Length: 163
Ligand SMILES: [Zn+2]
Ligand SMILES: [Zn+2]
Image (cartoon, rainbow, N blue to C red; front, side):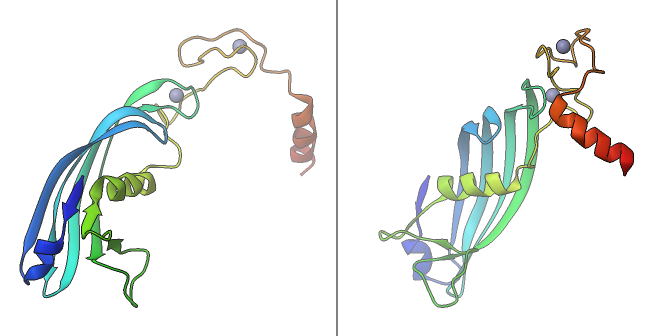
């Protein structure tokens, strides 16, 4: 969604409201879903500030077992907006393009990536997949022996035992 901020800049006190849905398809570990984004950009005497509330509802892919699971998250955003690069501009600023538009789909796509937990797990104690047969250990015990250790890990095990 692109929004024209020219009108907004014309007069102090002006407010531009937005309310849109951002479809999420393969964003990081989210398989599908939607982010509902609602907020406004307000002109505080020439200084533009965006405030928004975002609510994510998606199907996420578990980092351990690879299964999809329902995932919800919400977050707040408060960022300054500028028409063009200025001296006191920093990474926090949302900058309009040449035509005076800000692309909020892009802005919130990036916000979302920053807000997402580094690892999405279907549950804190997800057992993951068997390293031998690939069975989902949350669903069944596969019966593989867990005593046998990868030779590369033997070295680590020895270190741990000695330490
Ligand atoms: Zn899992
Ligand atoms: Zn197994």
